[in-house]
Length: 494
Image 1 (tube, rainbow, N blue to C red):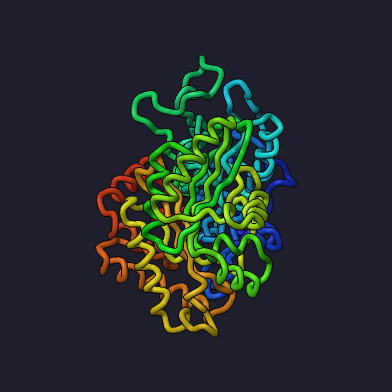
Image 2 (tube, rainbow, N blue to C red; image 1 turned 90 degrees about the vertical axis):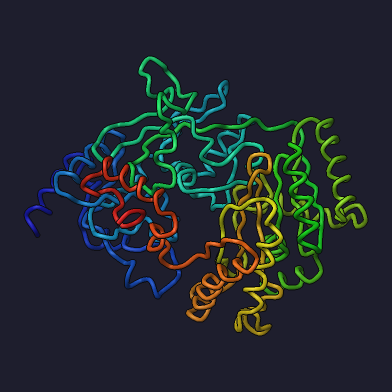
């Protein structure tokens, strides 16, 4: 063993204890890849770390970072390990920090509606604890075993975003171990004389979002206080059906701006039907008999509030040509209600179950202005139907297997959308289809005056060219925080 490597391992064991640090090849190999199913990436992604270490406290994390700096070792952090983009896979060996020992719900403050947790606390665990107290955590489109903190730091949207804000807007405070070992706190947490986190901003320049979307490059969050929300007295779902994207989008945008509904979502046929079936054949039958688009709306509060919101929804549906199927066909209510406990990504605000169809690959996703929802969907549809394999009824069947999911943000000022295809991710032929459609989307978007960022296998390679000065400034800040470039090197910055 290299002498320097042996000394680093000894120092790590002195910090966390003999059983919580190792360079055993059988252990490090287990951390050499994630659950991504694309075999073409294995040769480039399967890179074991030099060491695996499991800290139990913020102070241990701080000391591990000091060892990494001393020996110039990269640090990669993993929580629940559900990422499928290689983010938790070492790019240059180094120290893999697995935080599964940091699994405490430190406090649930019912009076101030916050929860303080460590990074290995899962969505399911915190959600269950909050529901016992008549509160809820907005459940994202993730498996229930995902880490709350990790999801907030890399997540984008929620079903209830229009009312409660983006995921990162739920941050009240945190402890962040910076690359130099400093324990950083924001907002009220920065004042040692304030006993609780309740205000995340400042003092001075607002650094609340320093770790958000940084993928670990600005430091390691070891503790976070998040907002919780009260559950209403009553809950009701209402679906409004459309077979025209322009009419569906018009209703979607009007409802987004009226401050009604706890949750507002626009879903395409193959997505909302897949959650109520269990085979591909059943899904295809459901797609053929169901409307192409559904506005999935949830109302919560007093009976008076729900009644008021439902009345508004019905007026807008009538104006835009939408149909409420359950008015004419009562048994359809069973289908609607089956989703309430079916999927955390679909429409239960509280369920953490997550299931999809044969395999989802999102070929375009991002934020856009509300007026472009129809054009974006039409550009995506054209790209799908023009693909020689995905449009083939005997292979991709793109006429059936295409989708849209859209969530409004902040009163409908902008929205997040996902456009995907359903495939078999382990099949090399499908992998080529995903890449081909993803690469074609910007061209189809440009024909409609849109800028579409199609997904590809190495999005970071084009980042400096695309966003220019923004990237340059972010890189300069990162160089000040991490001059040795030890934190997640190669993921956001080279």
